[in-house]
Amino acid sequence: MLKIISSLLLCVWGLASCTGITPDAPHPTQDAGSISFFTTYPSYEGITDFIKHLEQQAPDLIRVQEIGSSVQGRPIYAVQVGNGKDALYIDAAHHGNEIITPMVALYFLKYLVEHRSEPEISGLLSTRVVYIIPCVNPDGYTARQRVNANGVDPNRNYSEAWRPSNADEDDSISPGQEPFSEPETRAVRDFIGAHPDIKIALTLHSGIDRIHYCRPNFDKPSIQDYSIYTRLSEEGRLRTANLGCGPAGVSPLTVAPTGGGRGTTLSWLHSKGLYAFTVECYGDGVYPWVVGEKYYPPEAHILDICKRWVPFEMFMLKAVSRLAGEPVSRITEIYRRGVRDD
Ligand SMILES: [Zn+2]
Image (cartoon, rainbow, N blue to C red; front, top):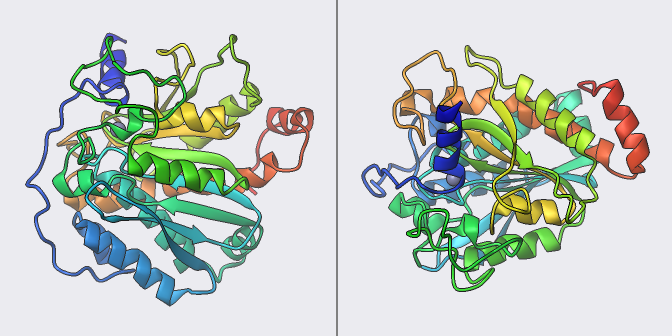
């Protein structure tokens, strides 16, 4: 148990130092859209090429939008997939060293595009929409470091329960001068604010293998129904048990008074009334291969990890419309009866 708690603290609460790989080793231009993209970790330019190529392939379905720029001036992109009204939001790489997370997000994007003519996916994308920010922190991603180019941890820079020092964390992790002091978090804030259609939000991290949501905060009641949180996380996690991998863990966060951490993306998304989850894609889970570096799998297993999370992501995409336009009592009833996979 102690081991679990300690590893949880390491990634989520930031005691871990970044163990990097060679900073931004150049990669050849990726064959965007093809499976070969998922055999190496791309540069940020490779990620950009990938999403723009997909947009060209399916302009009726995909829209790439620049939503801001990083400290060093790199554009931050959001990708819209689908034309429906109920939205699933996914972001990746708040922590630039967690380089598997953009790959997980981008593989889901590729999966939806590839299967868009099949009735199930076609139906989902006509009634729903997915927004993906594949790399919130492109400077950190390029430098293979957790923080942005100002040395600020973007995942401590949000306004919910933000505080200027992290006395009970690692003091080397800076939450910034004030909430939203950083251009990367402002880009996310403004994007979420402009999209009230978002019902479920997944913010991708790595270092452990777990799904988190905010624990109930009885001093500041939320509008979310906790039976739904429980059901979504549990049914979602069961769908991660495939391809020889065990199911991811699931746990409500209990460290900060607000339940989700000080200044974290999760706490802020939750405070906005979304069903929000920190999805730790890779780390201490049960895999059919040697784990290696805990923030990212060996390149030979990038694709395995990406594929593993697709059923979870599909489940959340299906669930968004169940959270829209229904009174909470009705939604609770639906989820207590059990969420079917349709
Ligand atoms: Zn992280």
